[in-house]
Length: 349
Ligand SMILES: Cc1cc2nc3c(=O)[nH]c(=O)nc-3n(C[C@H](O)[C@H](O)[C@H](O)COP(=O)(O)OP(=O)(O)OC[C@H]3O[C@@H](n4cnc5c(N)ncnc54)[C@H](O)[C@@H]3O)c2cc1C
Ligand SMILES: *[C@@H]1O[C@H](CO)[C@@H](O)[C@H](O)[C@H]1NC(C)=O
Ligand SMILES: *[C@@H]1O[C@H](CO)[C@@H](O)[C@H](O)[C@H]1NC(C)=O
Ligand SMILES: *[C@@H]1O[C@H](CO)[C@@H](O)[C@H](O)[C@H]1NC(C)=O
Image (cartoon, rainbow, N blue to C red):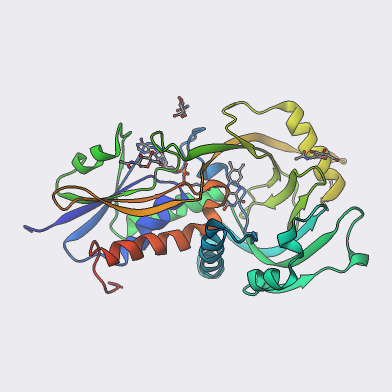
């Protein structure tokens, strides 16, 4: 066909996969999608963040433009993952109880009207009363949430994408503009490369966690008085439990610290209701170190027009919430493409 066209999506992390799947719904018959990435699901690299994620859903308050945008994207993603948990058992998504215990809640958490608005979409929401919370905890809430086995979910999305006619190519791009020539007739490139190298606003936040076999029945997040966070996130489909975790901006150390592991596990055994069937011990599967692809001011979701009708659509910099906002981000990115006439206006179905 004379006017056939390939849309290139760079990146096979949760953002690229979600966006590629979303775009597939709005292709005209002459359009197809090619996913180009250095790393694909089942490949392990320190710079491929998605398979290292916990991952759970937890609403985060705030009034900055970034916080408000993410809260809206997160809410839409919450509802989408509820449908995935119900309809696609192999996706590695499960609905479970979420609990938050904060020792030193910031002012935003104490604004009860703001919190009610932020929490309104949650199933089974209940603020815990003083006599229900552990010692030292000043603010507590429980609600129905979901947890994701992140490597399983990424592989599942890639499979769906391929079954719907998507194409993939393993390739490391030296520059985003190279993506216009990886295959003929590329007019639109979607940049879901996670962490870039040219954007001065991009930076990493190192996270170390520990994957253990011990099961736990809820995902619990505890903010410690010193500002650190402890959490346990069971991974569906017998994927073990993630014990976390650190948040270390601009720390490029790729190696796990055994001292950090010991601290994470000591806190977890104190606070989380593990049934320690293995003699009060944790059964460690592995340490995890990942690099959250953060960006000052939040994600860049933007169309950049180039010469001769070409465009780059940016969707990178998801930081520590890539899974939680993934479907909202895909929707917003595709929405921008529709507005710019880069997709057809009706869902193909
Ligand atoms: C310890 C830890 C815990 C986390 N917990 C949670 C959680 O509970 N909830 C949550 O929502 N999020 C969590 N996150 C954050 C989440 O993992 C990230 O936000 C998310 O994975 C970012 O996805 P991405 O698709 O933007 O990037 P990535 O997964 O890093 O994917 C980037 C893609 O771009 C490709 N790419 C990059 N450069 C090039 C190039 N030059 N050429 C070709 N391809 C390229 C890569 O190969 C890869 O395919 C956690 C992260 C860590 C580290
Ligand atoms: C990860 O990315 C950094 C920064 O771009 C780079 O210096 C490093 O070599 C990469 N590591 C691997 C294992 O690819
Ligand atoms: C594509 O995204 C990366 C961030 O992942 C950024 O560094 C890079 O500048 C972007 N490419 C272009 C051509 O803008
Ligand atoms: C673990 O607990 C101690 C306090 O009991 C705290 O100082 C430390 O920072 C905690 N956090 C993590 C993430 O290990």
